[in-house]
Length: 130
Image (cartoon, rainbow, N blue to C red; front, side):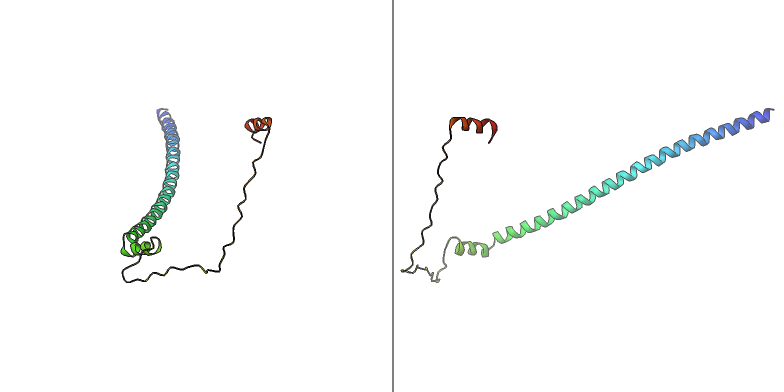
């Protein structure tokens, strides 16, 4: 009789331990699932940041190239000749003169006529927008 009580007590405690173990295992699986989701989210964020860093590095390289060209003698000479119309010693600048028989065609200027509105129309536009 005593042995039966001990065996039933042991079998009940095994069942309780098995149930507690299953609950603990379920919590571990749920925690693992949350960690995997976070891993995927952080991996996607890392990839997006890596792409953004690559784009910014390319932009930096392009800007450094532009700065190097802007500080070069070639850029200064190009600006001086094309925009400032400067010439080097020994150059013979050519100034193009228009044909004496050429008469420019006048471009007509269209002046818009003002729209005269009544006071009630002005107030209507102010309040209603039309």
